[in-house]
Image (cartoon, rainbow, N blue to C red; front, side, top):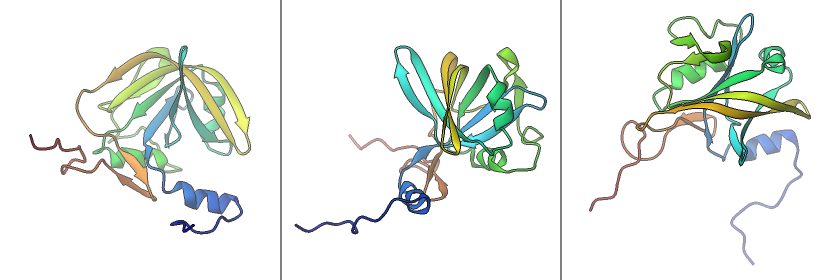
Amino acid sequence: MTSSTADPIDADADELRTLLRNQASTVTVITAPGRPAVGFTATSFTSVSLAPPIVSFCLDLGSSSWPTVAQARHVAVHLLAHHQQELARTFATSGIDRFAAPTRWRTGPEGVPILDDTLALLLCRVVDRVTVGDHVVVLAEPELLRHADVGSPLLYHRGRYAGLAGGPDGTARRPAA
């Protein structure tokens, strides 16, 4: 039997990171209220349950955002559009004021920072935090939703931001009739 993949190797952190670079992930920015408010770029956002509705994201315990998220009762998950690569870079950069101009945002319900013009927004109540290794999995129940009917999501794949194949803005093209 011939295989198109390499022989299996021991799974360590570096090898796992290399393997996971092949998985395309939706790019989100998570924000939480605090003094100061925090926000960070995450590619670990996922749906966990529909009944009840629960979503999750992961955060490194060493992150500067963790102490605030550890205490937050509410967070916002912003799904970024393909054209928001610079916003993703801003919230992935350490040591800067991520909410300074040109970031456009406002204070939303529960004091949570809400970014303007994202593809979708979920305002969530945190229901649990589970420590797993050097990260924490935050489980949250969406309370308010907002989404745009147009646009393509920003993806992260092989260490770069990407969009869906198709048009110049990353939107998929419909097949010709």
